[in-house]
Length: 349
Image 1: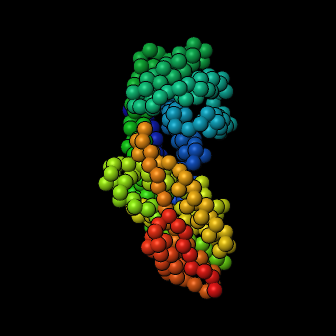
Image 2: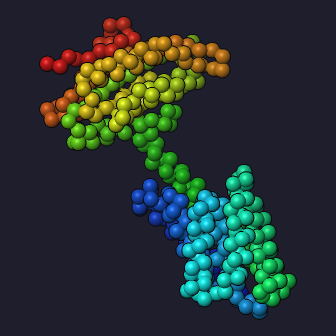
Image 3: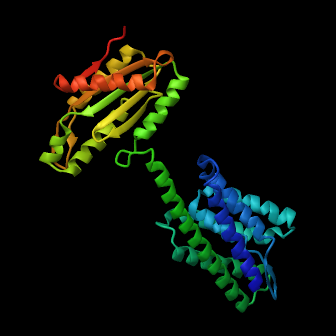
């Protein structure tokens, strides 16, 4: 039994490790999905059928351990789908009786319905859940199908609890490491305060559009006299204004466009294949909306704000990224120089 126990815990832990290791090499949009996670736990459940724990009364497969972990972190439907796939192998491949699995699936469905009401999945409540689940499962099996002695039942409870505790601990630890690494990767291209793309992200996107689109519009949007908000109120107030400004600007991003926070109080909006006239009108609509909006610096007080906007517009066939940025920066400089709260652009022609 001890060797069987080691085989089961090694199988589950190595499977969980493999799942997360793959995420560092493959497309994250695929491996982060519930379907991929279900595939992992379903595979571990099936493999657990190959290494059942031997007792004096027979063999007891721990296929339900990965399914319990899956149910704790995934949706009802994925849990049920995984249980159905495991049943196919349980009955048709390994030729086990249907009746014991029916008992399992009834208890498992109850667990799937209870999980959404659990505030947080912890080592303790998952182990307690396992004890309750396994006890009920073995009591019913003992009553109708197998003769499971009290000592065997206690040993199996200890074994399954240890396995689920260790497996869940590793699952949480690796998950925490993965999220930290993902945040580090994202921080290279994401502004933490607004969750918009940063300068690196802007630079990469403009390159892509110059390769694939006929024309490109760039609006550089700078909050006027921003330093005064920090001086009169606080830096927290400045952050609140920037966050609210980002939310306002998101409402004006056309289909196919992108919004970025360049640095400090400056934003950039990139729009492919938008006419020059529409680009200028969009800039004026943004300027007007900001001028007539109120920005909260705390729960009670609000302040007014204005923005200066520099418009850059280029046909990608006859210009470069540098030309576009230089034009927008020059227009923004002129807007500031001429009194702020205005949209400036270089006429075509």
